[in-house]
Image 1 (cartoon, chains in turn blue, red):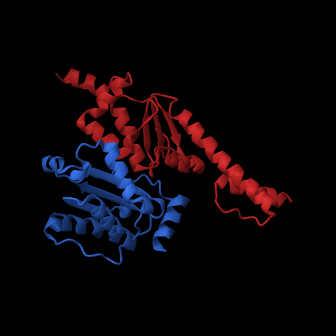
Image 2: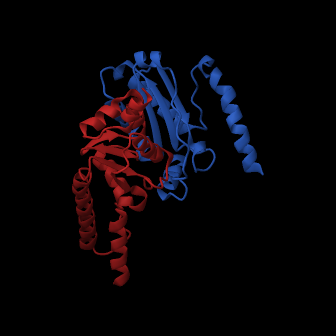
Length: 148
Length: 156
């Protein structure tokens, strides 16, 4: 009974919070979300972004509640001007190299120039999980690394 | 002696940097060297694997039964363009392959897509290429006519 109640309440919270997100001041580091905070810090330092969104999508996957294993990031930076997509993504991967080799199992990336963001200011949507993380030993190890 | 040999084999298969044995130093060094050799062989094999077909995909699961939403997205996008025949490798079946392809591509996640032996990217990049029309052009360079062109033609 309880697990199904928690699944029901979470989407409602997100749909209320999201429209107001751009009105909130920049988020202070949240000690309960160390990986998300680190990702935000590293991407800010590296790309000096015009706009940055870091979303923990772990709840959409077959991992325990409170995990920080699956993320979606949107980085809008003039550093991407003239760079093909693959190079942009490689730079983001490089910035988060440590997290990707330890606790982060999946990273969805949108890397846009300010002009591209101006034309299409939309966050992408991750596909539904197909349970790949369930019974995946390497994901268990990554979750453990994140907690330590 | 038999348990020593079995443990060594497990160490090499898992690719663990730390050997669980405490035998004489000579055996540990030999096991590490064999592990490095196996890893180097895989990198060499991957160089050939990515050229096996015009489109090669490293994914979780198979095109018929993807085991990950991002891998499924790659399969679906290719299918929309009429690309149903390609070589795919299920990394969930082979942990060494799973880690090896990340080193080979210098790319931390799966799925990974190769066109004519060249790394294209993961799910995000393929999706954006599909959305902005680049995928039709890239497939054309491979000698593959996207099914979307025919669909577009029919609708006119």
